[in-house]
Length: 407
Image (cartoon, rainbow, N blue to C red; front, top):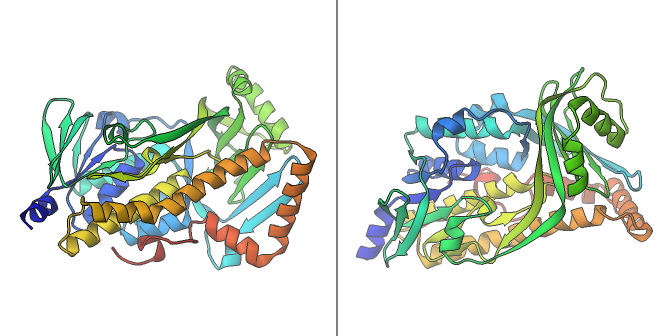
């Protein structure tokens, strides 16, 4: 009993001050649980990070999590509403349109730039006086029966009931906990940049599924979209060597639409694509969330939304353990977290990987199957609604916060 009490009184140590780590700290703070975040970058660098065109689609299910934490008003001003999604299979010409109104929802998702989201999360953590140690790195972990001792790169030590790895695909927490991971590389790179349009967009994501890879336009402002353009690595390298006018012509050619007097904002960047799946999402006094647990292909923009469900479930497990007088870093709590996240995470990783492989081939039998699939989904409302709810993060075994329940 004494060990449980000592563990319950120790804070949660979150390694990684990116989107997932900061949002987890805010979720725990909302429930009155103490957390400390360590981040490798200086906080001034994070706050001053320039806009580089990268953005994410925050699905409506993730917005519900922010609502449940009382945080949504802080994000509404930097989030561009997306009311529909247009998907086109360029190999067959088949199209599908998803409209939030058909589910009696006003919004399908929100487009938010990566830099704005991280700055806002950091501002909220500072306003709540959540302890942020930066620049600081994790150097080692030493476990005791009642706690884990984290050694930091300055030689200092921190005691915690639980260490959370929110430190990305190269997770030091995962490595120190000796949790294996399956990794794979795609023969593709994603080119990202922002595109300013001469007229306001229609509030829709446009995703073109092509054999080289998807090409998606995500609204992030009244007349601004974020482009995620996937090509083979060699083609992507060649495109990145072009001047912006030439790159824009190449984009218009692949979209087969008239973008009008569009212009590229900022410098386009390339990102080699890969995947990752951790063998498990917890170990002795360790839990993994976000990219430390799983890395996804960008098709259908599910990566951050999967991470939001991770941290919502972990916060739920920690809070319920503490309220029951149990150890939040004990085996029972962490095995429950692993069990609750495994099906959703493995399904989402497999789905995004499978979709990329399905649309990356131009073989006639595969095109036929894709065309039949598009037609079936588009013509059968129950099937289409299920696909929409899954995409919006409103299907499956959802965490309390995504169901509209309080922690």
